[in-house]
Structures are given as structure tokens and as C-alpha cells.
Length: 313
Image (tube, rainbow, N blue to C red; front, side, top):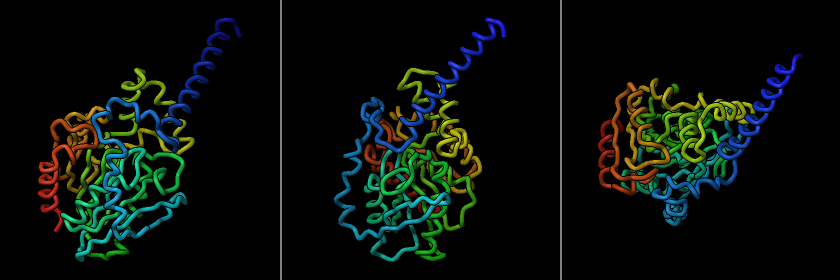
């Protein structure tokens, strides 16, 4: 081997090694289950509700008659959820999904709204890798979609074949319900509400890579995706709400804040455009990430209730 070839080979090995190290680093930061310190310093979340504010309904939640439910996932994880039965008998159930690095209790305000104002039963799952559920990685909605199919089956067993189910998620929960929408679903699932969802794992991670680290997505995201496949079982490109929503036949209400800089509002427009099912888009003016429900609750609730009246009997 001549000198030039030897130098090139050494450089290639060095670069590959550095990319593998970078891939593992970003996997540990964004996918591996642990406290996400970077979120507390993210300027794009300064206008959003903090974890404490999102949990402001914790006291209300603790006062409810909560039934703890569990399932075993297809890959043998024990997953947990809270179930709240409406005091007035009903055939309607809302499955409410929390966001990235959050937990089921963060959906307390939505749970109270569905239970007390709309008269729904409510299921609040902890997504895998969050809260009381097992799992050492975050699924970005992809593996979670299969978990939600199991939760749907459990609700049908629990409440009967006449049950009507609404899926409503916020942030990563919003992306998760869109990924579920592309699967074969029982006719009991009547419609989907997706609030501030990202378009895909690769899309949001590339956006955040540039936003937070001032780095181009290639080649670091590609290597991180490979590490994710080896350690968590999925490539980033698989976790695509954009692809899944294009197969959906269910009505979808897309909601996004116009001032969202954490998951850019443009992603809502991309998702809306990709959907060929009955669909609506609500952009809440001046709402930061995940705050549309609080920023303009009148507009939010009016749009949601009109949507539900159309598709839930």
C-alpha cells in the first residue's frame, strides 16, 4: 500500500470512528432514557409551559378515581396507564398521549376537559421510556404506535364493542397518533387530533441539530440513526408521521401554534398537505410549543368540539 492510500485509509477510519462516537453521543442525548437537561435551557421552549405548569392539574388528577392499567408490549415491556371513567355512563373514550420526555400527568388539563366538559372516559398512557412504563429508549412514536394499538384493544375489552375512541396527542404524542393513523384500525376509532406534531424523527432531529448545535444534519444524523437501529430497533426514517398520515382514512384535526419554534409550524402544513383523509387545520396565533390549548382556549375548544360533533356520535 503506497503512502497516499495509507493516509486516506487512516483518515477514513478516523472519520468513521468520530462519527460513531458522535452518533452514540447524540443517541444518549436524544433517545436514551434519562433526564434531558438540554430542554431546560432551550430558548425555543421559553414561551412554552414548563413541566411544572403542565402538571398544574396534578391536584385535580390525584382527586380522581383512577384505575391503573397495564399491558405487555410486543417486545415484553410493561406499559402503564391511568384510566378515568366518566361518572355519566358513555360509549366515548379519549386516549390522550403526552409529549417527549414527559409523562401521562402532563395531560391532566386535557383529561379534565374531556371528562368533565365533553363527557368522555379517558385513558392516559405513559409512552414507552416515560413515566411508569418500562423501556430504556424513546420511540419517537414509531414503536409507540404498536403500543397504542394494544391500548385500543384493551379499551374495547373494557368498555365494549360500541365504544367510540378519539386519539388526541400533543407534541410527540401528536406525532404518535398520526403514526397510528396509518395502521389498520378498528372502526371504533373515529377520529384523530394531533397538536403540534413533528413530521418525522429525522425531520425534527435535523431541525434541532441545526437549531441547537449549529451543525448540518448529514452525516451525524445518519450515524445516530444507525446507532438507534442497533440499540433501539428503528431507523429515524421509519418514524415518519408524514408517511403514515398519507395512508390514513380517519378524519384528522391538525393543531399548531404560530409561534412554535421547537417544532416549526411549517411541519403542520406539511402534514396537512400529505393527508388525503377528511382533515382540518387550526393554527393558534402567538401560541408557542404545546400551549395552544391555554393560549386561546375558546378557539381551541370550539374547533375541537365542532370536529368531534362531526365524527363522534
